[in-house]
Amino acid sequence: MKIKVLGAGGGEVTGSAYLVETDNARVLVDCGIFQGSKKVEAMNRFDLKDVSGLDAVLITHAHLDHTGRLPLLSKMRVPSPVFCTQATLELTALILRDSAHIQEQETMHLNRKRQRAGIKPLQPMVSHDDTEDIIKRFIALPYDRDLPVARGIKASFAEAGHMLGSTCIQLSIEEKGQVKKVVFSGDLGPKGAPILKDFEELHLADAVFMETTYGDREHKPLDETISEFISIVRTAAENKGKILIPTFAVGRAQLMISILASMFRVKHVPPFPIFLDSPMAIDASKIYMSHKELYDEELLEFIREKPMMEDLKTLKICPTAEDSIAINNVPGPMMVLAGAGMCNAGRILHHLKYNLWKPETHVVIVGYQGSGTLGRKLVDGAKQVRIFGDDIAVKATIHTLGGFSAHAGQKDLLDWFSHLAPARPKLVLIHGENGPRTIIGAKIKELYGIEANYPELNEEIIF
Ligand SMILES: [Zn+2]
Image 1 (cartoon, rainbow, N blue to C red):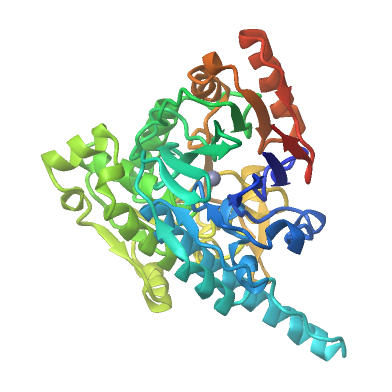
Image 2: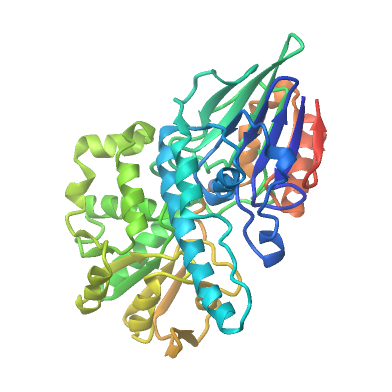
């Protein structure tokens, strides 16, 4: 058996894709997009020899860096089924459709410029049709069942605690009369995060492919971050301020809403209007609400006591642009949750344009802000920013909360591996920059005497 690293290797954090090849079958685990610089994004392709004759694709979770190249398989006429959990199926369909729409819009915009310059038009990487075609081939599998996915290969999906539907995938691979187990961690969540159950402990593996995104550091404790958030919201609401939260539509938006619901229930602050101003976050929230079987015990207890919507009577959803514009006339205290999470596009830009120059506005940054984004400029203390061609003074208070990560820090990564270490697996560290992955690799060697492998992109690991 061999496993080829087709993404998230060689110090890359994005583009997760691992090709498992036996004498009898070829299976791809994850099919993610590379994100970042133009050079990195140019790697968003597959060689036909790697994906032709694929028997199955298995998806750990819905994030684009684990699913974004799926429509390419349709484009390349690779007709394999795609297995994942039901929640991942629903969230991936939402995320892929949104991504195809953005790609088509961006290409159209570029092509208008190219046409004016007399240059040949570009095609988007994937089309709406490629996306719909691959979504039709999704098959949902339950958690924790060893089910056949290709000749001689069974897969079991275990909770990863990273986002709704997220999993670690454990493959049982039969070859030459022997069964070997290979575990792919996917992305692991931090223990104790609201809404989701913690990652499941796995014990059996001949080989482990483990993510190392935060292999070198700890996050600030989540309960401290939540307390900080509560105190910011309380002060802002008491001063009748407008609170703007740029947020990612899937995961982060639902986390913020669940924290607000519990704030209202325990009367940390009287309920005030909250606007969920993102069609995608509204759709993702519906998916989150329809999968109560994936909630942790704390949230189940909370909703058994009283339905969450009773705490959220002041939550208003804003599917249309008109709904969004109407928010401008609502006085504080109020809160707007809108995308994009890094303030580089989306409806949050309109709210920032109308409110950043007012001292009574609070902007709460709850996610990572990439360099060069408007969000990063605000975090770095810019006194003036440019939005839709206008210079806007920053008079609002900008709060940055760094502790809301959906990723396990070093301690939780080591905890996850500690249950597998007694099986003495071959350890392959992936999905991390070279700094973090070598730091956690050294830590694992010190603790268990297991020497890690650090594969490059396109490297083949033979078992
Ligand atoms: Zn992820």
